[in-house]
Length: 178
Image (tube, rainbow, N blue to C red):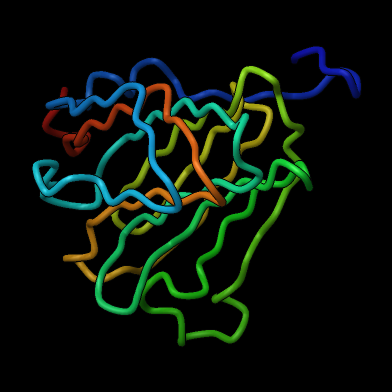
C-alpha cells in the first residue's frame, strides 16, 4: 500500500528474483530527442524476451510513448498522456489480432503526473507485456502475438524530451537461470 494525493493505493512491483534472468545490459542516459528515436541497431535483441526500465523527464512534452515488438506492419504501443493523466496500452496492431473481434483494442488507466517524471519497468516475454509504472501505481499485463522477428523498439513524443535513463536486458528462459 502507498499513500498518494488521492488516498491509499495498492501498488505492485516485480519480484526481485526476476533480476537473475537478466543477461547483458544496454544503457543510455540523458538521451535527448525530438518526435521519435529508434533504439540503435547496436542493440540487437535476439528475441522478444527482455526487461526495459526507463526514467523520463516530461517537462517539455505532453505525450510520450514506446513502440515495442516492431515488425512489418505491426507494433505494440504504450503511451502516456501527461495532460489527461492517462497511460494507454494499444495492441490494435500487435501482430496476430484477427482471431477475435475484441482482441485488437486499447486499454487505458489513470496515472497522475509526477513532477519527478515517469518511471516504467516493462517486461516483454514474446506473447505478453507487463507494465509497472511509477513504482507500481499502475500495473497492466497483456497478451500479444507478434511475429518472431518483430523485435525493434522506438520511443516517441510530442515535441522534445529527455530520457534520464534507459536500461534494457535480454532475459534468459526461467529454466536456464536456475
